[in-house]
Length: 117
Length: 110
Image 1 (cartoon, helix red, strand yellow):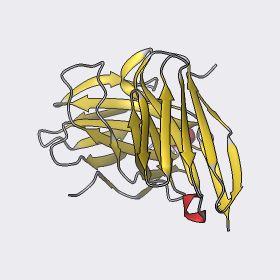
Image 2 (cartoon, helix red, strand yellow):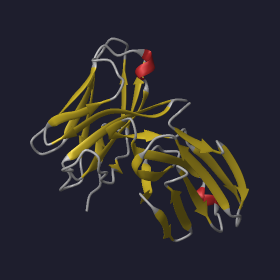
Image 3 (spheres, chains in turn yellow, orange):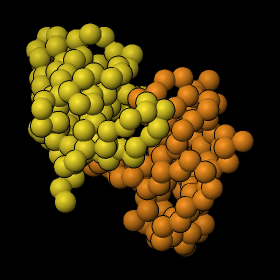
């Protein structure tokens, strides 16, 4: 069974441009999560999508946005790129949950390394 | 103070040694997740715990809900165990997301 896939592997942009990152979840998973791992800052939660809806959002500015498609794949868009957006962006997926308080194991993709020059 | 604290931050061991990595959290949680990240960046799930103890090969994870503490043990460590080990919790102040510790960098020398 295929795991979580992400594309592209690497992305180089210049300041002010827009970046689009893509994620395909494990078959049967309806939830997709996005995380940022900037150098020296550890992993931080960005966004959670489930069944096409944004369910939760981390402490990031509005220029970080995304969406989830009917096939449960997801896009993360970062507008007006800044140098500090350079990071590894990880996507994870899980089965959906009837209760927000219950945790379903998340499985991570290989990440997209975004470099902003 | 971070919600999730790991110790030690860096750990160096000789092949064959028994290794313990600790994780303390300050909030009530639904589950705790131990993750492994290799230099290429990919993250592998090791354990998901909500109580008790789990074992997989040379890896053992325990959690004490009352004390808000979890440990990851590696028996008979091997150089291929060299990686960053990350503790993450689900629940606390905000559901729908994992909150991560800062990671423990493990280096095992042959």
